[in-house]
View (cartoon, rainbow, N blue to C red):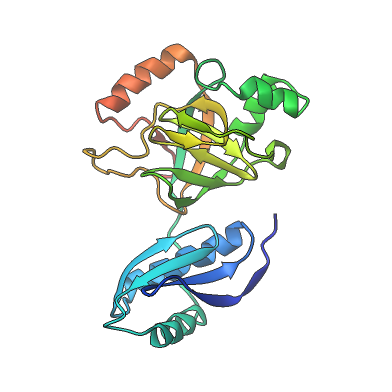
Amino acid sequence: MAATLHPPRLLPSGDSAVTVEFSRTIDDAANERVLALDKALAASPISGISETIPTYRSLLVHYDPDKIGFDALGEKLLALTGQSLPPTTKARRWRIPVAYGGEHGIDLEDVAKALNTTPDDIVARHAGGDYRVAMIGFTPGWSYLSGLDKSLHMSRRQSPRLFTPAGTISIGGIQAGIQCLAAPSGWHLLGRTPVRTYQLHRNPTFLTEPGDRVTFFAIDPKTFKELDRAAEAGEIIAERVDA
């Protein structure tokens, strides 16, 4: 879906936060502007800002109203977005193994039936994609991915599950995702990865970050178990291919 880019809008978000919105649709161009502003604020901090949270199409800015007011902050943010923002750094690229179908991807066959194709075709389409980590949210390490093949766009499940396992690789709407922790979900489960995008006592704690690129490749259940043991021990088993 092409983004409808517009001049940045400032949206009050409670009494100590403001949302800087760049678009009303999901698109890499809008996400690039979000990340560029986030980078600019990190390089040249505005006094009073306590935290920034990048999302698909907007940047949430938390601030201390005792140090800076909404109007003054808004002026500074709009002035910054009006400048030539620095480009984001070269994207890191990750290859992530996935055990598709069976007990690891319990919705794969249903997705194939719904899209009038075969499970192997769904795997080929999903693994053939080049995805962008647009944002991290919902639970620690949950990577929301843009770039899902249009042929895989489909409505979310009518009845969300109360539990889906850690490492789930799923699709929902026009999005794809990497779920690090066990959590409820209404997305369609295609497979699981042994990769931990979040591991509390590992360095780095978070594997992916907004702006990263991700591709997937299929593995069998035996390989999943082997890699899962290595990942549990703290090994980073995702392949970084940009270096």
